[in-house]
Length: 298
Ligand SMILES: Nc1ncnc2c1ncn2[C@@H]1O[C@H](COP(=O)(O)OP(=O)(O)OP(=O)(O)O)[C@@H](O)[C@H]1O
Image (tube, rainbow, N blue to C red):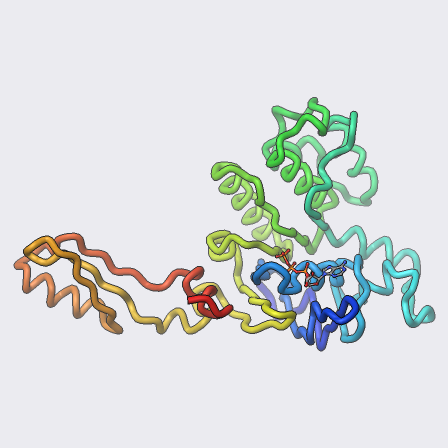
């Protein structure tokens, strides 16, 4: 991870009529990091990400993605036509940014291999299509027509199309929705590989375990504002949170205590029981506990 920013957002605002979806977001994503955006339904995640991708127009604020304002790259309605980059800069920016949208993975009568090979032709330095098909676990379906794929297999194809151009920056919107547990684990491996190879990754997810496993940093959005940014283990003062120690009394009844010094408590319990403490567990709040607390549910 480096301190150089891949994405810089300041004072981003976007309203749909009277509904303010994004109410002043500031955000930096560093080059090489995996950044997860979390937030309840309607929090403004997709709106924010689609503005970063150049698919939606903002009302105000500054946005730089790989040093370029995405609105100037894509927008035909940009405010300042003079500022529009030259065509080669636009093509260069598009090829450096990979986007995995929700549910694009159906191309009528085309096969998986045909679609991936076709998309590879759009990029100046595309990856090997067959290698990418293997990476997303679709080799067995390479000859299948895309409309015959299952939901999870279509998402894998979406991911293949997002990475075929070897992007420097990859956006993933709820990438593992509909994946079975094994497919999720395989996908996480793929993200780790891409990250290890230096790809900056921004993902939105509702799975807290996914954010915890993959993200270097997490940003929590609620009501169109970023309420906190931090590493998964430090968010919401998680590191300082009390541990819960549970055990069974000699009568077999469950007992528990919260402690800032659980090791001392366990040592004391071990002395009290003269060795093994029955039913002993020591837990700290999960990212999900902390997240739910942050967004106001208890
Ligand atoms: N095209 C649109 N037209 C009008 N309102 C919209 C549009 N897109 C989003 N909104 C509204 O903007 C707000 C933020 O929506 P957004 O899709 O950005 O949230 P989200 O955090 O991605 O939610 P989810 O987790 O459900 O995907 C919501 O109140 C939503 O109804």
